[in-house]
Image (cartoon, rainbow, N blue to C red; front, side, top):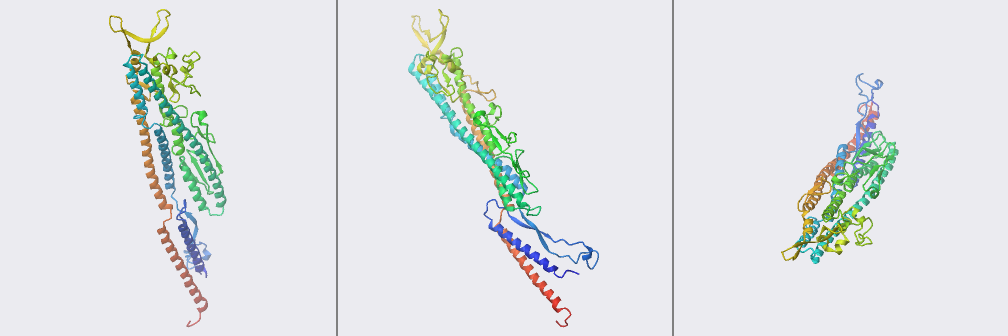
Length: 536
């Protein structure tokens, strides 16, 4: 026979589950504007019917005596789509990386603004024009020669300014990288602390459930961490979360350990060295950290060590250095500086020196040490000898018939048979001719070969194309992230209309169950008080 109060127990559980469903619907509505909140639901199941034969009746093949025990709940779960979460985090890393890359390259562009119009190209044109104006005059035309020196000085100052500002950009992002590494390490420590809380709380929950609010907080941490590198996430049986970055474990939920990032001294290494505390090199495929590494270590075809082939700050610094070095070495060599250092038109400051007269020794001659300094955009300047004697480059080399030593003087050419002499500016014409073949190699053989103006346009185009490419990637990533965020909100976000409908359904469910208790009470009253009484 059926237990007397089975129906009451069934409806009691139903009222409890309906009430809890109303509670969770109300909790969802309450948190509709809570950042990071995940919609919750009560997971229901039909009560199990015992198979014990002693409790059966009517036949040996059914469980009719205990059928209809109603509903119960496993627990309260979160509604999340693991696949959408994974896709969202993958794409948000790309979005963050490309946004940071565009910002960094835009700062480089601000430094090299209009180099192919009124920047580097303009000052280069002015220098060559001044040289050409000088070449059609007598080589002893000091006033015209001085204009050429001044134009060269202006070009050097522009290159110095480019170098200084690029170094400032570099310093800014080195500092940002240091701060970012510190932030990521602190974030991972917070995740580790939260893992400890989750593990302790999990003991109070059934196997597949846990502290949902703590899970929400952890998912927010994970979403934030996804901006900085490509990560993968696993939830352990004890409720904790394990996170890998670039294939290396950085947050171990089971062991409650963190594998921190370690940044080497940038200025000591000359490159950004980023390793995990466990010793592995950080080799990211996306994220803000990857952008910093690519832009600081990106040296194109000039990459060495842990530098890479990206066109970052390092590359454009090197490219400007190569421009300065090519201009200087070509002119110096054509002017005879390979044999006589005093013939150098352009020199580089030794490290730590900026004295415009320091390139002369105590005898007033070119210091041999200056000829050994590697010329860069940051240290290039017009030699003191050329500034003090602008017509120096108009002098040609000849051998003294008496001493056999080389001497320099103006090239003389007889104009007529009466012995009058015209001075020819052949040396300046020779200097200019070195830039007329259009086959100058700038830096690495694999980078560029052409004329000066083509190289300037080449650098400008490369910077613009790189920014355009990264901006296009960013636009695509933003669109994808927005789509995935909408899809995630549809699954995990609280929808007021949906929760309102659920609330009405739960209320009707609760009311119907209450009415069922009344009906059962009436039936039991009839059984107890009315059975066997005729006419009642």
